[in-house]
Amino acid sequence: MNIWMKGTKEFWDQRYLNRNMGWDIGEISTPLKEYIDQLTSKDLRILVPGAGNGYEVSYLFNHGFKSVYALDISEIPFKKFKKEHPEFPKDQLLIGDFFELDVMKFDLILEQTFFCALQPGLRENYAAKMHELLKDGGVLAGLFFDFELTEHGPPYGGDIEEYREVFSKYFHIKKLERAYNSIPPRQGSELFFIFEKKTT
Image (tube, one colour):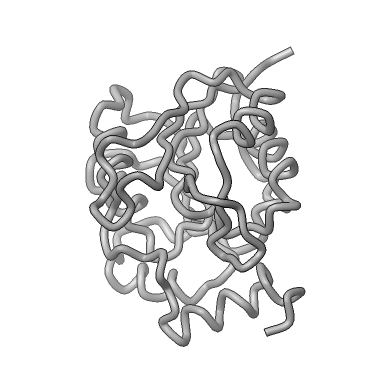
């Protein structure tokens, strides 16, 4: 496939149609589940970008978080999600380019295999956009992969120092460390993080 196709709607549509979804573990990942379980307010407005089949979205919604939004560039996984969750508000399923989202602000954004799917040249843009989408005091939390950066993604890797450098311009680094509760296939290759939006 032409490298310029990577990251386009057509690219991701094809991955879903071919069931080429190595990132999809079939359920919410343990680190995110345990993080969600300790959230104290059900009133948070939450975004899950690159939501795919929406395991995190489903878990949040089923545990009382009603202001949760899923975003994906492909509508294909949302067709499945709608059938499985007919009670989920359709207007909270957002189809489009993350970098063009400008409709609202969020208290919390959850990262799960979205960052690693973007071409590395977009990482600064990602950090800036996350900052823009969060309310003052808002939090970006989730998982980054921790393995050698390669041009052969997605997924694309990276390391803790690169992430610290990119995100410290926009966020207070509250936590950035090796995930202790990764699923077995990802043990030793995930970093769990909590970043709080910097305000001027």
